[in-house]
Image (tube, rainbow, N blue to C red; front, side, top):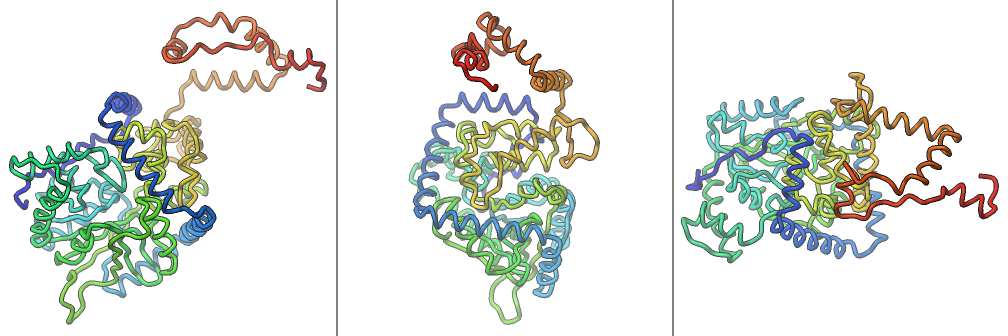
Amino acid sequence: MCGVNISPVFSWSGPVTGTDFQARSHAALNDSQLRANFRRAMDGLMSKRRSAFADTEELESLRDLGASIRRNALAKLPELLEKLEANCSTNGIQVHWAETTRQANEIVLQIAQRRDARRIIKGKSMVSEEMHLNRFMAGHGIDCLESDLGEYIIQLDHEMPSHIIMPAIHKNKDQIAHLFEREVAQGRYTEDVDELTAMARQKLREAFMSADIGMSGVNFAVAETGTLCLVENEGNGRMCTTVPPVHIAVMGIEKVVERLDDVPPLLSLLTRSATGQPITTYFNMITSPRKTGERDGPEEIHLVLLDNGRSRMYADEQLRQTLQCIRCGACMNHCPVYTRIGGHAYDAVYPGPIGKILTPQIDGIEQAGELATASSLCGACAEVCPVRIPIPQILVRLRREAVNRPSGVGAVRGSGARRKGLEALIWQGWAALHSRPGGYRFFTGWGARLGGFLPNVGALKEWTSVRSKPQLASKTLHQLAREKGIAGE
């Protein structure tokens, strides 16, 4: 397509498993180039966000407003989705419902086959990544080309996004220059950013004009007007949604908002939290296909509403807060784990803090429960979340769900899948010990006497390979208190 040798299949290897995640994390930590790339990028993004929210009082007020808008939309979700469908249909947008990613892919395929389409040009869409749409369509002989520059770069290199806002953020200029030399520029090497961008633009311009279908995501869908809002910086989203004769928009069901007035505060939070911009270069509001007498725009617009586990999250009051997310990526930029291992270590569509709570709920505890443990619970993600999602509390909840006794009716699919008999026994012993004062005093007393003789083996040996061996106090707190004459323990 367009003279560019692009495989539509990413290197995504399937649901993440605990062992794989740990191995990938170790590999990422030992990759000095990767860590340098992320450090530089994350420092820049955090600095821009701080500058964008210089007024702390205004920031907190805006966060309160954004959170209330999202909570209001989720509280009325069934009603608003029906209203969105009705108003979109009145506007001429064809609405489709998909419970699973396979159903969503089948809907897109049916539209493509009816239009005899062979080429799809895509704007940035995390839901299409969630659907693994490119791989599915390739299996049916239909090419998908990413038009967002970051997505275009990683598609050239057969990778998956490492960040939900900046998918190629793990690459530096030199790496991209070598990639373009090999895949785009026919052997010509340049590190000039303007030249590299111009190369991509030339290829993509040809693709926009020849594509049969344009695809996009949706940042906000307004129920009261049936309007699809699309936020972008490069203009590729507008090209995808206006040049090809068919536009297909895909979105998770949680992206709906009640009123048009709800959009400006969320847009302000989104752009300033994501890239430190007061507003993006383009903000598209899509309400209908081309009307009689209009000179541009698609002949058909389709909206695919994807559930994929979101209804299950919605049913639980605490887990429902996961759906407040507006996909700004600020939690990733400030996460001490993500900024050190990068996005590919997660091997999931949604990496970082939001991915740690979203992916286990989509893929199930069996497949992705390990991700919920990849956090120190420092709380940085919650402090910067523009819509106040309590990510640490949800992480703790998911960890609890992971080790619950399997009942088959847990709030999260696969609840109890990570329960281990020995670990459960240890915690039962811990609980019993701490609920019996006599036993507690006996155990801690002997622990204080013998703690210095802890054998340096097993987990303790690994721990002390880079740290000092923990030293237990020779006397318990209660003993010290008694010696000080403090009564009433």
